Image (cartoon, rainbow, N blue to C red; front, side, top):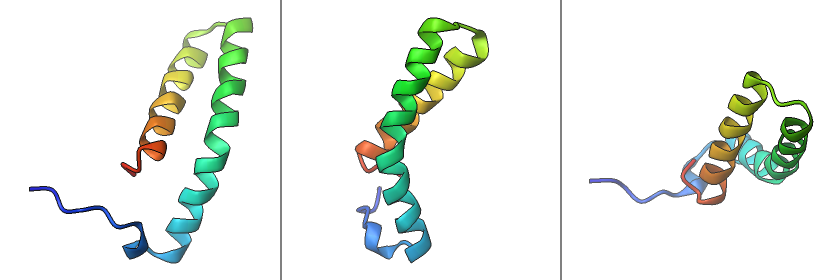
Length: 63
């Protein structure tokens, strides 16, 4: 059984890092998507999928 997630139980430095990453991840993902459209390489595509996955996790409060 999964416990309820409470972000206030995290250390203060981790809460600040999550807050910072939540606001920076979308512009990074958009930039990477544009870069992937211009110069499509395998590394760019993998990095784009990783950024989209992290963005999804941060916006749904999973991490």
